[in-house]
Image 1 (spheres, rainbow, N blue to C red):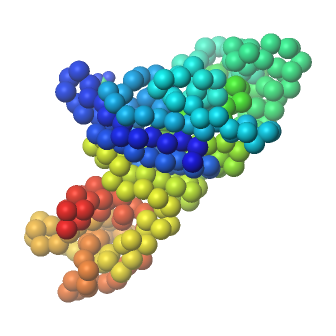
Image 2: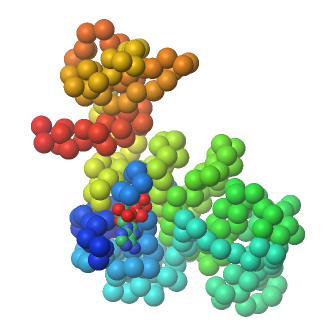
Length: 304
Ligand code: ADP
C-alpha cells in the first residue's frame, strides 16, 4: 500500500489531544478523510505534509516511479525532504498575489519547482491550465477569480512539481454545487494517476468518488474502508418515521436516533435498531446514516 500511517499521536501544548492513535492505510486512487470540525483532519494532513511533527507514530510512503515501476519506501518523519520532492499540498487557506494572472502565477510556481527551461515551463503551464479547466481564464488576475477557480489554480500549482502524493485539506468549503462537483471530478481524475488524499466534513464529497474513506472523530479513526461496503454494515438496521418535533426528546431517550431531517418541510427521524421499532419504516441506508450513527453512537456500538 502506498501510504501507511501507524499510531500517530499529537497533543498540543494547550492539552488538546488532536491525534489519538491514528492508523491508516491508503491505496492508489482517491482517499477521503471524513470528520466533523475539530476531529483532527488538518493536524493529520499537516503532519503527512511534513509541516508539523507528531509526538509519536510513523508514516511511510511507497514512492513508485510510474515510468519504471520501481519503488522506494520513504520514512516520512525521518526523511521529510524526500517526501516534499514528490508531494503536492493544498492547504485550507492559501494566499496568492491578487494582481498577477493565473498564467503568470503558475509560471512562477513551476520555476520554483525547478522547471527552469522556458519552453518546457510554458508547455507545462499550458497543460496544467487545460487540465484544471482554467485555460480560458489564464489572463485574468487571480484576485478576480471565483472561489472554485482559485481552488483549481491551487491544484494546478500543487501539480506543477509532478507529485506522486496530493494532499488536499477541506477544498470544497465555500464552493457552490457546480464548482464543487467540477472540483471533485478533477480530483478523481488526478486520483487515477497518483494518490490523492482529500479531507472534508461533507459526506457527499466522498460518497461517490472515493474508493476508500476513513471517518475520524476526536483524533481517532472510527471506521474505514470502501464507502459502499461501509454502508452495507447498516443494511436492515436503519428505520425512519415522520414525527412531530415535540416527540423528539422522548424518541431520543428510547431509540438510537441517527438524524432528524426535514423532508419537504416535515421532520423525519432516522433511527438505528436491529428490528423494526413500532411505527417505523425500513430505509435503505446511505453514507450519511453511517456517518451520523458513528458520530452519535459509534462508541456504544463498539462497546456492545
Ligand atoms: P479539523 O481539521 O478536523 O477541524 P484540527 O486538526 O484543525 O481538526 O483540530 C483538532 C483539534 O486540535 C481541535 O480541537 C483544535 O482546536 C485543536 N488544534 C488545532 N491546531 C491547534 C494548535 N496549533 N494549537 C492548539 N490546538 C490546536
